[in-house]
Length: 404
Image 1 (cartoon, helix red, strand yellow):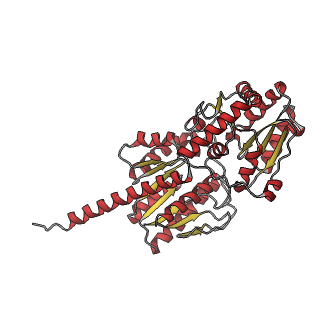
Image 2 (cartoon, helix red, strand yellow):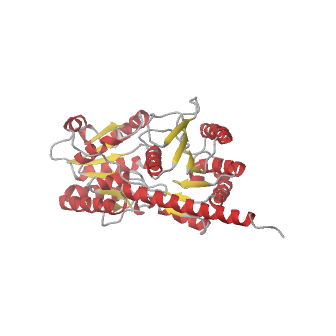
């Protein structure tokens, strides 16, 4: 099939939405589909056989929009709608694949041009759009109705986790839906020069906890720093490394760490690192940590955490418990005291660290490989295509019946 993919974000960058778009494009083109991907102007140019990219023109408003609704985000939507509308006037596609809020664009264009659309749901979109601003919560019921209509009018939904899959079932049990969990993307470790360039500053005989991801507020870095400061009072030989974050966020949390009394080599902010290098950093850690307490979707990093073979310490909250349980990770309540106790427990028990690391990797190997991701995607599109062919054949038979 010829598919127009509407991706309302920059591409390519080492961020979860761009990483999963790359996985999706590679999986669909491998199975014989031809893709045109429409995305924002920022990002690195990459080549995917069978896929062409059309970018929005860069402007002051085309930079990455913040979470929630904003004027910048609205301008980006309008630009994408106009560009896609012009595109469909000159080129024929069989299907529109809409990521996140682009489903509202796909719904309108699909109606205008008679083109079916698939909704790729990777977040609770109405809630996410209303997450900032005093007046926006009043728009929540309207956005929920809009999303409900989009689901009902789509020919299928790809849900990024179990929670979102259940949301789709709650809207309609007749819409084809495929849960499309992400997968780890850790590279192979073997480059000695890379080992040296990625070496962390570690203190001898210290247990190193590592966090990887952005440092935005929804990641609950405040909770991580609070709990680590409490753990330091009980164990003097632990250290924390944070990978990722903007310069502004790093400055902010460095000040907060200093106020909590965490300084020197007890904590370090390594800044953003390429995804391809994460395996080298994870290898040097004794445990990996995720404090997130907000939201409903599974953090992309959890799949790579598990694949590293290192033990995972995470909050016992919905973003984690959809794929983690006590057999593969150390789950703690989302407060400073309990997370500090979890840090101390892992620091003091090397056998537990080894056991959890092994079981976590086994889980990924069994359920969350890239092969599994691609097979689910291909199977979903095969179902969509078969149902479309059957519908077209039924329509042709009906219209070809002689009149009496």
